[in-house]
Image 1 (cartoon, one colour):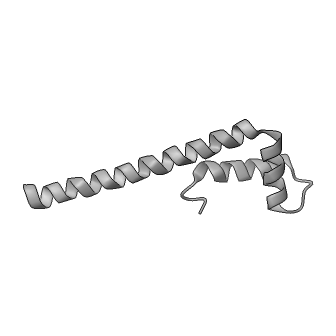
Image 2 (cartoon, rainbow, N blue to C red):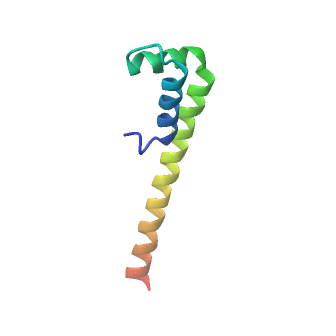
Image 3 (cartoon, helix red, strand yellow):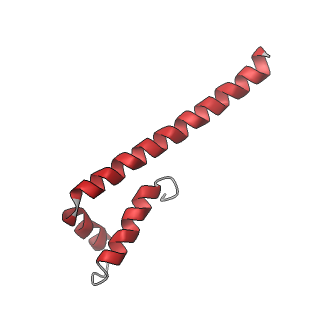
Length: 72
């Protein structure tokens, strides 16, 4: 899942580095969300923009192929 959300993977990696004393990964991520909510909001927005751009690229490629096959 982190392949589709690269900024979230960055956030999780940063949480692991910043809170090594916590045992569970969920605890580390929750601690980082509490410590820097603006960074978490930025990560969520960036992932949404990334997924949106990927969807637009796929729709554009599909439309280009349909145009090349049926119109040309």
